Amino acid sequence: MIIKKLIKKLGRNIIVLKEEERGIRQSVLMVDNGYSHFEHVFSCIETINNCFPQAEFSVLTFEHRKDILKKEFPNLKFIIPAGQSGPKRYQIALEVLRMRRRRFDFILLLSLDITPLLASLLFTNSDVILHNQWRQWWSIRLRRVTELFKITYIDKKKSFGLKNLARQAGLFFVLLQQNGAGLLRHSVLIVDNSYASCEHIYCVVDRTIKSLPQARITLLTSAERGELKNKFPAVEFIEPDDYIFKKYRIARAVLNFRNCRDYTVLLSLDITPIIASLLFSNSRVFLYNQWHQWWSLKPKPIRDYLIVIPKFILTIIINIIIFVYLLISVSWIFLKKSFNVFKSNLSIKES
Image (tube, rainbow, N blue to C red; front, side):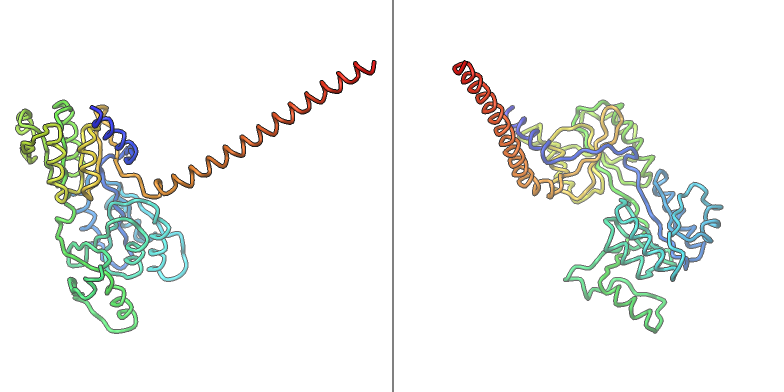
């Protein structure tokens, strides 16, 4: 019992909960630099809509292209570059920089135009993907030192000139990996520690399927929940292995899936699965509670711990200043009162 309380107290100190109104839905920014054919753009939008029907989908494009896109996709949100002067490609890159504090799950590029590419990779925390003119899907990230000379992408349309040399120099530090449309197919692990009702599980699985219809969904649950298999035949069911400590079986099973999922959905604030999910995997962790609210769970950033000591020292200094001020004020009042008493006694003696 004492150990359980200590673990809960530890969890409260290292975990941040934030309510997410949009839940597990995706947030996607498509960057249209004005050079792609509309058939290419239409194909990309349709694929994203099929994979993420409830996504917050924004398109960064120019005013003259917005009208054509809006006729085909009226529900899209459009972002127009603020600047109206200078080359178009720099307007798009500058707009990406202005939105660097916004959190997108994906930034979707339609070409390897180097300025929007570097702005997306260097100044945002979003995953960057490419859908090129040959309808291929590529993930993009900065190379590690050991990958500097690794060749993964061959540009089929090369040209000579200063522009191409600058582009090749920029791509030297970028790694492209072809993943096909499977790049957009997420894996979701739903963790049931037997505390949630079957209706609760029905609801979270149903909402996950609506948000990510092409996702690979795995439900980690006990053998007693066999009726769930008939309700969702497309969902994979996994039972935790036997373990000497029964209450830690779920957490141990979560650790076994630490490299196999993009999202982990918890149904209660049982601390051991939370710690196993947050500290030992790179997946995004959500809580879907009994009131049908989505909460994101994240470890506290290191800066919160680094600021503890300066904050403690500052608090002590402020308290010392307040104490000295009160001490001086009380002493002055006491001395003034004593002086008045002495003065009164002296006047009585003289009389």
